Length: 114
Length: 110
Image 1 (tube, each protein chain N blue to C red):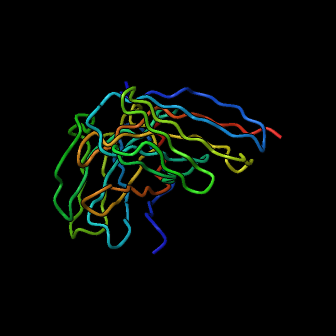
Image 2 (image 1 turned 135 degrees about the vertical axis):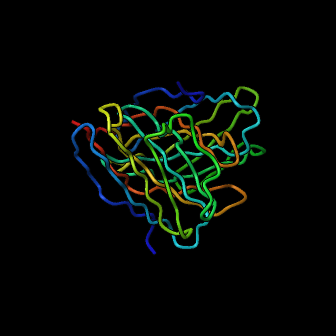
Image 3 (image 1 turned 90 degrees about the vertical axis):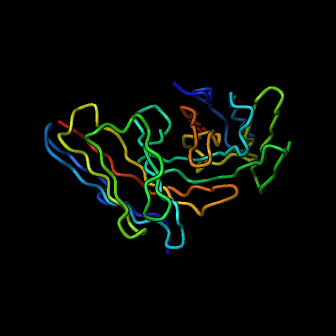
């Protein structure tokens, strides 16, 4: 396993459409995180899973956003009724629970909402 | 806004040392991290330091931590063109959450 993979790398959509992103973490990692990064800023925490349980959600995650990790392996992030303000890089990361929490990030999905 | 602050830009000559500085606000942070991001890519973990340490060295990288001033620095020795990237400082804000600075863009000139 070479790392965290995300699909697609780029997504262009029209305002109002729904989009879904996928993340495959490092196989033995039980924690999975979603972050959002806008131009010129550092990543901001959105949500995280411990195995299949979603344990924390940021207030940045509006009702239009939903994330799942059904079998404790891969995760999906869906955005409904996209808005131009949703345009950003969506980063997935994974880690092993406990201790220093080294997060390993994927290459991200760049979303552009027109 | 961020609780972690970094200078935005650094220009350095190839072969010189680079020093990237960061200040953070949460005195209870247990771990502090440095990540590197190249254009169009995700974040690569470079190194991290536990809060009870003052210094950590890893090959060309040296991390210095001043807990009293809540100041963290990353020194890159013998900077190369491949070191050109954005460097992010991050603190472990909670068990599950990292808080990142806005990043320092490092440009290495020949």
